[in-house]
Image 1: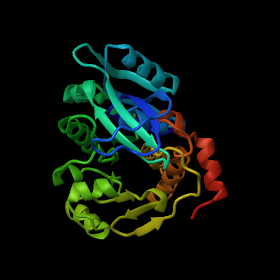
Image 2: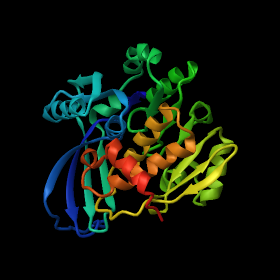
Image 3: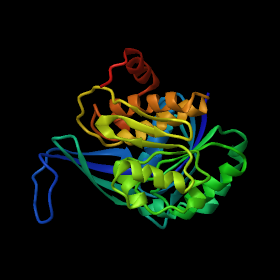
Length: 303
C-alpha cells in the first residue's frame, strides 16, 4: 500500500449555486446553500485515501464545530489525524464558493488556523519518514512550513509532489527539491509571470523544476520532463462542478507514483480522477474511489 504524508490546509467549504459568477458591484440570487469539507490539503489527503493510499495528514483546525466536523470527516475517510492540531487561538479555515451553471467556480478563502500550521508541526511528524513513500504539499499554509516539509523529505530521498496552489512566487531552491510540480495554467502564469504555456514551462524548468505537469482542464494535462513532452487528453464527462478536480488529480497521481508506476501512467490516473470529480458537486464528496478511476481508465473514453 502507498504510504503518503500530506502537509496542508483543512477548510469547511460554504457553497452556493449561482446562474453566473458575480462581477464587482453585482448581487446575484443563488440557489441552495450547502457545507462540504474541503481545503486543498485535506481534499488531496482524502483523494489519495480513496485511491487506496495509506494517508497521514498534518494540519490545523480551530477548536470549534467546523474543526470537529472536519476531523471526523477525515477519520471516516481513513485519513490518520494524529498530527492534526485543534488550535484554540484561531478559527477553522473556510472557503466561500459560488458555483456557476457553467460548472466553473469563484472561491474566496479565509485561512484561519491553516496559517498557523508551523515548522514544529512538521517536525513532530518526522518519525513518519521511516514509513512514507511520498510527500504531498500545497500552498494554503505558510511557505516556510511547506519548505520545511519539502526539505525534510528531500533529505532522505522521499519523492515530493507540490501542487503550487494558490500560486505565489517560489524560490528555485525549493523547486529543485520537488520531484513533480503540478500547476494549472493560471498558476503557471502567476508563478512565472508568463502567459505563454511553452515559455512558462521553460522558465520553471530553468528554475530547477525537473518534472512539470500542467493541468489543462477540459484539454487534459501536459507532462514535461528531461526526456518527455506529452499532452494527455481529458476524459469525456458531463461536468457539474469543477471544485476539487485538481485535488482529485493530485491525490490519484500521488498514489500511483507511490505505488511505483511511471510518471506518465500516474498522470493518466490523475486525469481520470480529475474528470470524475467534476461530475458531482462539492469538494470531498466528489472525489472518486479507485474502482471508479480504474473503470474509467479501462473504458478509455477520452477526447
